[in-house]
Amino acid sequence: MTINIALNRTIDDSYPIHIGPLNEIEFDGKVAILTNPKVAGLHLQTLLSRLKAKEVYIITIADGEQYKNWESIEFILDRMFDHRLNRQSLLIAFGGGVIGDMGGFASSLYNRGIDFIQIPTTLLAQVDASVGGKTGINNRYGKNLIGAFHQPKCVHIDPTFLETLPEREFGAGVAEIVKMAVTFNRDFFEWLERHDLRVGENLLQAITQAVETKARVVEADEKEQGLRAALNYGHTFGHVIENETRYETYLHGESVAIGMMMANDLACEMGLMSSEEAKRIRAVLARYSLPLSYSIQDVEKFYQTFFLDKKSSDSSITFILPRSIGGVEITDTIAPETVKRILSSYHRSIV
Image (cartoon, rainbow, N blue to C red; front, side):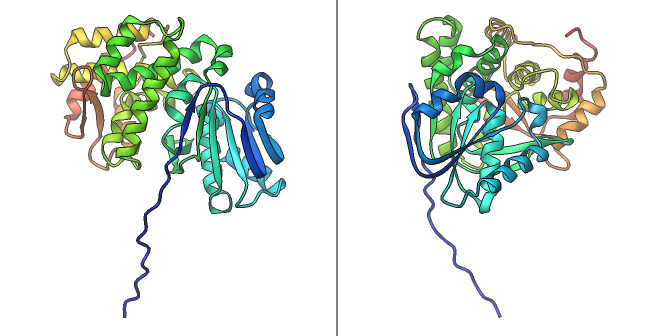
């Protein structure tokens, strides 16, 4: 005997992304704001002045990628239970990518899922992490290996929050902007070559273009079954670097910048990109003082860590490589000796 459960349905998870001064937010219920001490000290009063809700609670967690773990998620969930949030409550993720990822993940778990919105306060979060519904935490095996796709109800991107951003974090965000230009938009990359994002209205234009690019990719492939994987250019290498350095040496965008250099070297080796194009990408990243080299202590260990990447399988590693500037190649057929030859060029290199 067979009993069928008919669950065929259409789910509309569409949501707006507001770019500009923070709108007034009205909510008829309980709201929990997840943030960290640094962001709270700088910007919490601005958010509270725009927020109208019946009850508002603040949940504060430590700042840093090393705190993106189960212990922090349990702390967040405990505070949500303490405040007696229910399925009609709202979580606001107010901070950088770490806050956004953990806020989204906690909201996907609480009472089997409640609504959340993203208000990113770093450049990296504004152009990348806050858009697309990827949520999760790290563990000892790697980055973002535990998580869920949980789309926000909306995203509020206010560039004025970036006025207090340290130079390193600004550069880390630029790396994600360059990533999207290299893989999807040659004209945008050439615009980045000509314009300094620290001057005038250039940053607002770059944020808008980057978000538009990511939005179109997410629309085409929400669950990363194909095209969206291209947004991980630089990440396959970068995640290994973050894992090796225990998330304490580099910001995420800095690791991605180094990973892009490694991916470019592999792309040149495969004949997908010219050395001149690789130099152009390096020049744009170098303008924002990003680290572009890394000392690999153990090539074989570095290579084996690739297999923990979510896109890889038991027997093959998926690499995201630029095809010239403005195109991308997703491949899992590169010979191990070819990859290791590139890694060997970074073996104990000067950082």
